[in-house]
Image 1 (tube, rainbow, N blue to C red):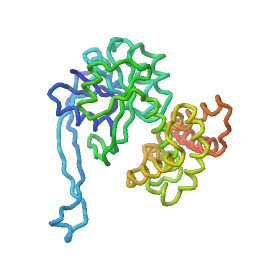
Image 2: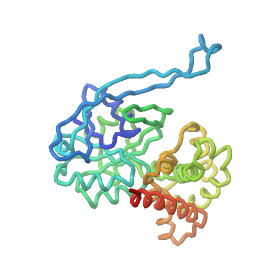
Image 3: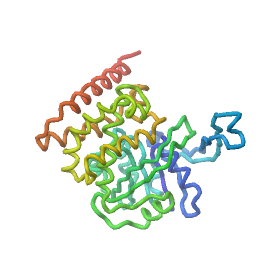
Length: 319
């Protein structure tokens, strides 16, 4: 089976690394920004696993060692989409519509597309752009990347499902089996739970430019305020976790991924467009539709949105 990954960031590279060991899958990257008819190019990638020192050396050193595994991956232009059996898109939510638009005319409508990214509201946009069968996914696997080197940051679970409750097709079943993902008949519940966690961690780490563990150590009260507002909204969308357990889940994730910077924190540090509109923005739109007032969440969103707009405008007008 030919599988193309669009988005060579942390999750995209992690996914490619997993798929390349399969005898049944031929994974490639597609870069939709390449000019038409650009020849495919092979690049060197690295999977860097940081390991704690062994007991034998623990008395002499507390530093972690890095085990690097080099491998090659092909990067192809968007025309190659027609040769695939499955497309997995791992770009950020705010980039997804542009990617889908670029695939028009290049992607046969029978090929399934998996949207594996943070945030919600993406599938609703996707189905207005392409007629393909769409699947959505969320993952709690952690990773960061530097160029073409990916650094895994803790284990987690990946869920894949159909928002329209389609029966899993063979391509989806093989993908899930190969990467150890769970095919969920209730993918919306997994997405809503991930949205809850992201909404209480990512914006605060972007605001304070801190690692995830600081949510527990220094900003627990701020996270609690956001949680108290958005929990009732997400309950109406199908969140099934009880409130006390739900907040404990947020703190657990913040501690488990403690040494990580959230993707939103990194985006704000590097002055890039973030997934703010697909996390807090989505919740605020839903709250407005339900006539729920969310002042703390709204103020945080407005502050971050103004900051994001300011640095993006600065980049536009700068020489």
